[in-house]
Image 1 (cartoon, rainbow, N blue to C red):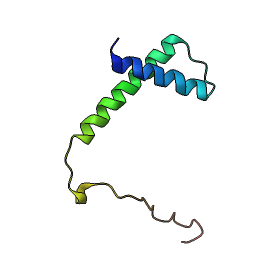
Image 2 (image 1 turned 90 degrees about the vertical axis):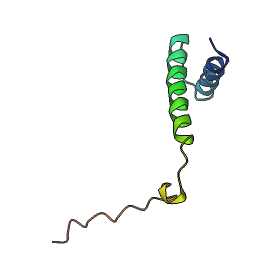
Image 3 (image 1 turned 45 degrees about the vertical axis):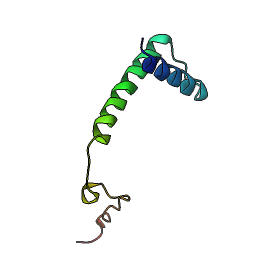
Image 4 (image 1 turned 90 degrees about the horizontal axis):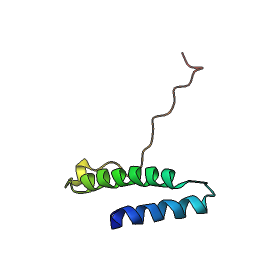
Length: 71
């Protein structure tokens, strides 16, 4: 087990304890494995240089929902 894997499992155990989630060792390992994949995907995105115009907007304001009473 790598150091990163140990850190992730410790993080999962700690978070589960704080949230009072009963996780057995197999569940902790599966959650840590999923989190490891999420970290890897985030690293790929962070490695891309995006100009400011390609960055997502800081706030999302959806268009107003159409009023059902209007024709």
